[in-house]
Image (tube, rainbow, N blue to C red; front, top):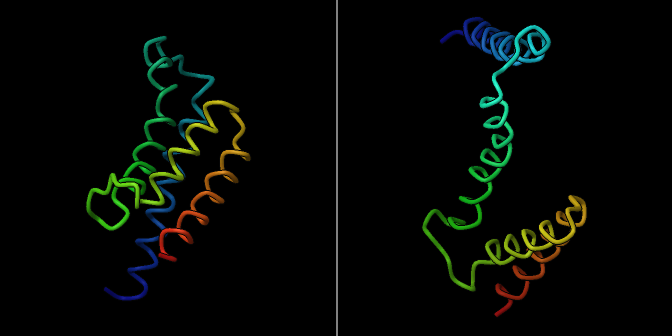
Length: 110
């Protein structure tokens, strides 16, 4: 593939992606979604974040690891508890990252 074709492909993909995302924003006032669709769409962010985060926690090396030696899983569980109890995003991130760093240090120092 030539450089020109590559850049044209990247540009076309960018324009299409932008157009798709813009259509949802631009058409929000013109099209009323049924109540069922609105209820379902409330769960999209949770589902997407879960699909991204859970594999990173339980498959840190590409294989299922549910052991106490999995620092990511323990730190993630701690972050979930902090998020559930405080509903504070910044505190959740700080506690989760500090826990991960400490657990990695402790588990790899042995």
